[in-house]
Length: 282
Image (cartoon, rainbow, N blue to C red; front, side):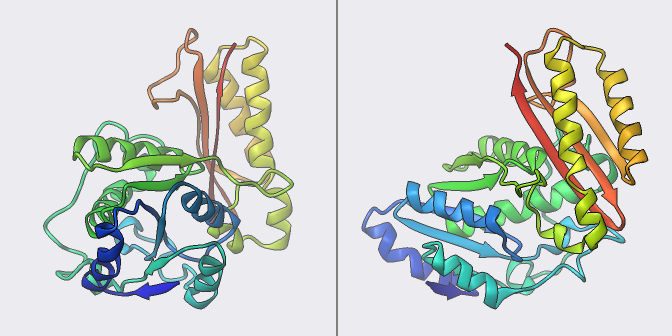
């Protein structure tokens, strides 16, 4: 696996593959890789001739009092994992390479309509930071396809919309959430959990599963169901940010909707966890 740290180096490294007509798949990450990331890379290798991954801890998607400074930087270990997973090229730029005019650059990408709710309601500017850096990476790498985990359900919806509306000729592939044996969705932030919190964390997914079962049994008072679930999480030591039942396009769900997704964000100690569960009613 080759590593490039500049835009010109990355483009040069891909030039021969483009001339040969090879397909390129892209997996953007912030590093501190786990099995979920590696699943994306292996799926990319299955779908395309060349796999490009990026590692960049994007400062513009972190808000005040969030964990940008303490977010783990583990480039050497990440590189070894990527090489083992058949990644061909790693793009690992410094911040000045991605933001040559600094974080206060005048140009930003905003995706309205689906970024003001859920995580966007409490993380001001987060999705603009995500949309901006993904647009930059898409322009730099120019892949045929890009793969993202479905754990970040709202983020995936944002990226699908910006790709369509900004006319990027890129196929966006959502890959199912990878979970630990106890159901906890794999996340780089799981490493911030204490041993006791890690034992408690699977209750987040269990709560989603129980709520899905209630809905599948015919219950449709989503306000009552979610308030009960939020109260349960509170009793279990979580501080919920939100827990909502939505349509899979993230519009508010009604009693007649069949394609649903339950989304949750909650703090456990100092760690903010997110998860979701999408399903179709028969």
